[in-house]
Image (cartoon, rainbow over all chains, first blue to last red; front, side, top):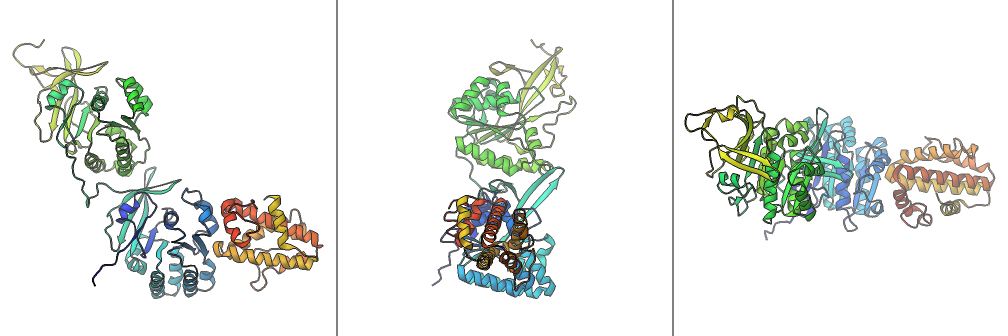
Length: 490
Length: 136
């Protein structure tokens, strides 16, 4: 007889949190939801309660001092998960502030146990447990430890999954007995950087299951909390798509020739060039070419609204029709406090929605600006994670990046991010015979041979057309080349 | 507060004499307080009832101070009983129904009519037969 006990997992009702928890909330676990003021502790507790409670699994929400219950009810019902019709049926509220003030911990423990024995809830929430801890501090820590142990034991023996909600500082984690006794600790925090606030959630521990480590971005909206699991998840690598390495034509015949047949499938390629060089034109041609061959495409834009973007794009009318047909999805991500995980989730959702095979991100500068300052500070890491996760979705990605023309040096990207992508296509202005011309070259295409020469190109009403190679010049990348001795061009 | 609900509330405090009406009013307050205190605490319920009494005193001036914010634990409704017993039974009854409807409206403005209906249905199913307040 060595059958292992099966720990069932309850749904948290918070999008993204179950994945971070390692599958959900372990049944009968004794958990702590901790964090500073305003981090969303009570909202998380309520959201879990409304998601997990049912007539078969009733819930008890005990309030002890902290936020007055009437105000909590007033504010919590602004969230869409709050269902007043379930209150006093499968969800009961119990206020024990008076007991704590007039009697003490013993009285509070007795009241909780009596209520649990009478109503047999399978979910018990105690908010705020901090008030209990303060009361314990008046009489010594041992009483708190004893209180928590007895509470944990009673509630587990009555087969209740328990959540203590409390305001704690990180420094307390080492000394407070609650942190030792709890089976699970969910820590909420918020980071302020300049004018932006980024909310984070961390599953510090979750006994019996493998949580996803690290800080995960979280948002609170009218729907409640939403967690964006930090990606890529190192424990669950997604295999690369089976057609990885096959070529995706760009829609620019001459460029496909330079690339040796197109961009390898599943690759991430950066199109780098100065303002007006045709980066957007090339990326939309790449998307359009895919759609013409039955591959739905996605364009994520940050600076312009989709309608504005489509109006100014080459083949704007055709692109609009493709949007209407469902083969092209325009994703507009403008907020200035985005996290990389949130961006990726939005893109991933859109990719899955239309079965996209090609994605264009236009542009990386816009993406950087849309990120919250705390993510901008480490843009390379943000982009590294996003690029890795995107190609694992099975899509081929092109990203446009602004190249600042200095004419004396070549910097492919302002953040040193060019090594993150599999390929780089460089567009450049060059002065030839007193005229400003555009040239393109393939700087790298990891693992594949490609043309090394630089070729002139024009942007025509029907798109980019590659011209002749400039083999009789030197110093092309400076923008002011000199002709090498030999037959004169043209 | 609908006229139907006000009429139903009158049934809670029937009585031929002011003493009888006052006794029913005190009993109603005790029931209400006990029921809601579980959820919003004794201090919370007492504070809301005291505020409702202040609002009611705009129409029944003798009601001012009938429910003080704090009261002795052994006789929390003594002032209410005294204030009502010296009125004629009809006035006492009207005033208490006013208090009750004011309280329900106040609570509804704070936590929403749906939740009020849900909570008070347990206590007074005849007043709140469905989960929504004011739909008897």
